[in-house]
Each structure stands twice: as C-alpha cells, then as structure tokens.
Image 1 (cartoon, rainbow, N blue to C red):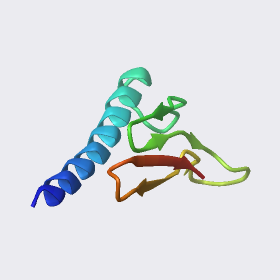
Image 2: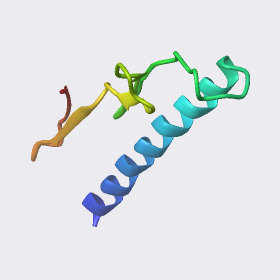
Image 3: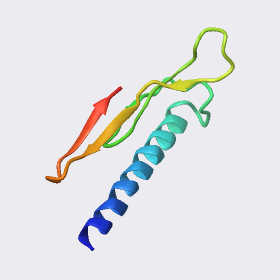
Image 4: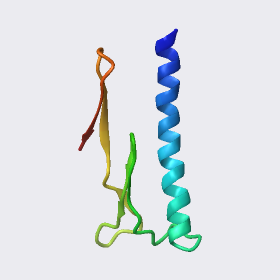
Length: 79
C-alpha cells in the first residue's frame, strides 16, 4: 500500500540525518568524534552532544517527537 512505502521513506530520512551528522562531524574534527562540537538540526533528527558535569559520556540534547497526523502533515516537536 502507498502508506507502507511512505513509512519506509521516513525511516530513510532518519538514516540520512544520522549519516549526514557523522560524516560532517568527522570531517570538521579531523577524523574524530570524541570532541565534536558540531551540531545538526536535520529533517527528522537533531544532534548536539553535551557532556554533563563529572560524566564519562555525552548526551544528545536535540531530541524531538515526530507526530504523524492523519491528514499527512508531519510535525517535529522539540522536547
């Protein structure tokens, strides 16, 4: 059905956003992601990693809810 094709295309956008972020972060930070300060606000996903105080890891503080409306409208709502 047409709606099944549309769902696969949306998943493809998630892959695009992720790949775009990683490739550009590696390019900007000389082949490393450990100290990347690059942020990306994609079509469906966003990436901006920050390090909480006294933490070993990083967190992505660009999270969204994606709302698919019956009318076909897609909303990206920041958390």
